[in-house]
Image 1: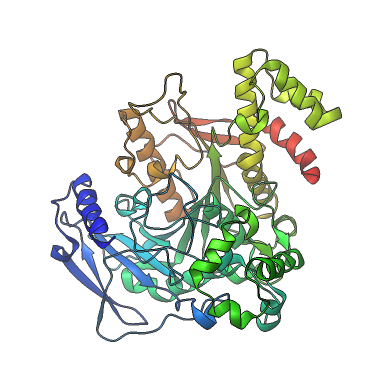
Image 2: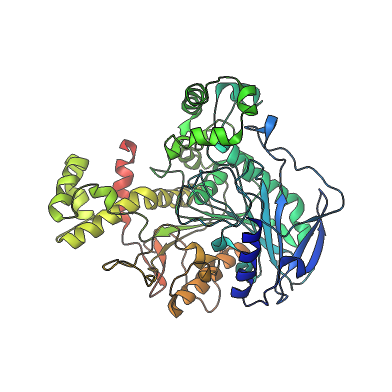
Length: 527
């Protein structure tokens, strides 16, 4: 694994236009944090300063398993910060994830930092904090598509972090609730994110970042995390802007259970799968044994809950009351978030089957559904089913988040849609259609298209440059606009809810799908 990571580091440096050298041969730089001195590296082109594998909390192992994150231990001497810290405990769940760390491990609470090497020392940089996706059961900050070196060159300091996942991050139990001191259990992964934000507030100025200008941003579960951090009283004041890419805790993306439901599920899992009800025994149990048992459960079995501490109630109620963080929000989703297969299951994608399923699924509302998702041909039926699948999976929940923040957030809101269909690889099956699927925007935002082996086109690079510019502009000022870029109006009713489309003809246009989301909103209580 160590050799594999070193080889990848050299390859990645070459792709960045650097003179390929091992990290130990790079010019180093030292920074003193509250815990001790860190030694990072400067890229051979003198453009990026990087620190990796920085501990922001104590290893959550042994007696600290399933406890709120504790302060990171201090060290003496100089700590090398050139390699990613281990990713959180997880199984092999998503095939599109590629890791370059020594994980998985329970000892996973580490963050990474990229910043431009040449910037005025008297001017603190805006800070962008990336939260990776993976359904709260998988993922890591070590993925090549999340390397923030290029993004930092646009005048920002970027931080990415790992947090506890699955059964280690979201296991609830009555005894954990009793011992917590907050009458809560579960949500340890989200508490990790708060701990990372606190570490940033305390340390980031030492690196040249502005603790009073922090933007949190994430994709999928990372985007859901952003919506939850905005709702949580524990995170207030730790960030000042928010960006969400595909997902929020509204609708059906990932419903949050009550604490009582999560406790009951956790107690049942401990007794039936691990054969014990003792917290002491559970904490002494090997992590691999717990993970193996958890992976036999449905993948969403261990996720965020309404614990009464991190989340006092559900996000919808918090936003409706205007009790969320009142910060500018930029959010959106991709054109092809879903698959028509989830609609048709085992049926052929035909108009006849499409209409039949609509009548069964929506009953008296099927006529309205078929008007909003029309299909006169088999091809249109497949496309309409795909649109509905994407709306139900991600788009509706993200739309509802934008609407709630617009109504009660007292801050500007900006909405986008990523329409850039990825170029097909040379070995694509005949008849494969280009799409803009879930998570496909990540390489564009970070300007690392080369991290995915596809025949990229000039227009892809143009979209990447545009998105990176908008994202960093927003982090700097709470507004994505700047001279030379297509105007991006704020999301508002007076202008027919404008949406910035990224794709073949990037630009803003009125929302043409609002009727769909209002229909789904009407039905949401029955989902």
